[in-house]
Image (cartoon, rainbow, N blue to C red; front, side):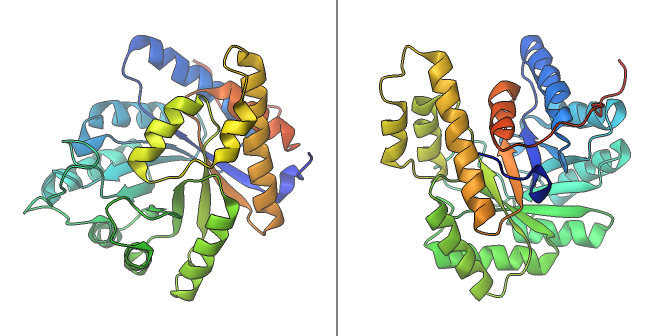
Length: 295
């Protein structure tokens, strides 16, 4: 498997650490994955801003200690416009110029009723427009090849994506998926709706299939049965499981490259080995000097 490393680009998603041990794991991961020369890295932001401080601290360190282009996630759930603008100001002061604008899940949890804050942005399209009016930011948004769990249907979901694009979004990063035919049909519908911004496939290397199924069920992504077949008999063989997981993600990316895609957003789960194995299989070359400043 040798997809020319010059034919595609990658970005990586991290989440802010919740403990000292996780902090060390995150920065070890950043250090290793910087060698793959990502277009940018992004840091997530918890429901209702639950990880606001850790997110800001993480992006400050990424900007201050690395030369990695860094994007910060921002949600508007359970926040007034003033509170949201305050976070935007902190991002701007930290040197962030790329925001991943999301409505966000209710603080009460995925699947509970979403109620916009009466003094806040009602949805991601409004948030994007607000960021556009504030000015100075490159804005990414989310997209859902199998529709957002709360959307009435795929058509309504694509209409929301169009509203986000019309409001000023520069690209959409998709929820992870495993069936490339599903993605291709989705992309055709997106283009037919007059949406021209890049739609960047989200790729989830499978760290743990059982955990993935639980997570996918909450976020509306399907887990095809062929994945069970690929992992069958490997419960007690961690090295074989990791090898199969790397094969699956690399095969998915290679197939998408053959379909004309060139950018991929990889959900790292703050773990480098599996992501590195995927990129190695694709023939991507590491840069000689990591973009990490001396501690």
